[in-house]
Image 1 (tube, one colour):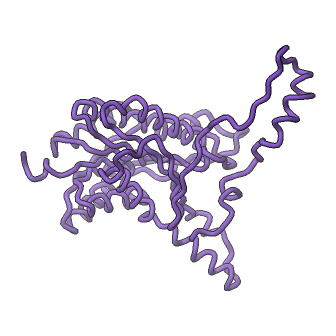
Image 2 (cartoon, helix red, strand yellow; image 1 turned 90 degrees about the vertical axis):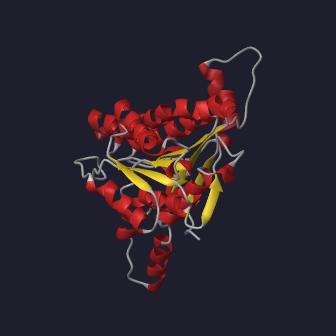
Image 3 (cartoon, one colour; image 1 turned 45 degrees about the vertical axis):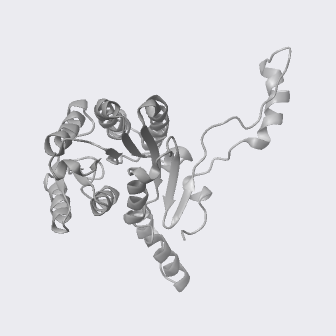
Length: 304
């Protein structure tokens, strides 16, 4: 076995910039060989730039690490299979898959075009399935593997103008749990990270007063490297026994997010009709209703 093949091997999708790049760099610094996947599209998924992935590879190699570029699209199963094949052909193994690739096509629901819906679902949800499924036979055979998926509070809590993104991200949380359940017998772990990235919001916050400037400075502390550390942990042996969980990372804060469980119940022996539901069931349950809150209203304090 070559020196390269003895390294842990991690695949990071969407690693040409932002959070994905930070994860690739952190994984390499932690000793893993990294398959840097990036199609090189814009935030909205337009265009391609094959130099994005290679630039990250060059940076990893300049720091003494080991990496290879891949520019296939996660949105197609054939592309996902090629990503796995890149790892196997280059290093002979795969130990971790970090599903980070994504695009945004934000639009209020009543104005959303079906193509905008499909494009986001294809990259986020289908892409996460495609790469995870392509790696699954390898993980099963070697009886070891780690998946790290990117969800979002847009799906876990809610945000306006992101029905496509929110649906995809909540679907990823459910997919991760199903993978964790189905592959636990093969010592394969699957977890989610909900990363906070406030870059667009930072640009719109006024900085006319010292207090406003101080708040923006705090928001700027939520850098991608904070998320990369958590992803590297979850992809490593240090996270043995941690599976099926959802973590939010916001600056120096790490949160374990809740998962859907019954909150309150009511029983009526003779059954229900619309009138009795209105008169009895809803008044009994209403105190546990969730408000129509968005992520920023739930995480209402500045990051620390």
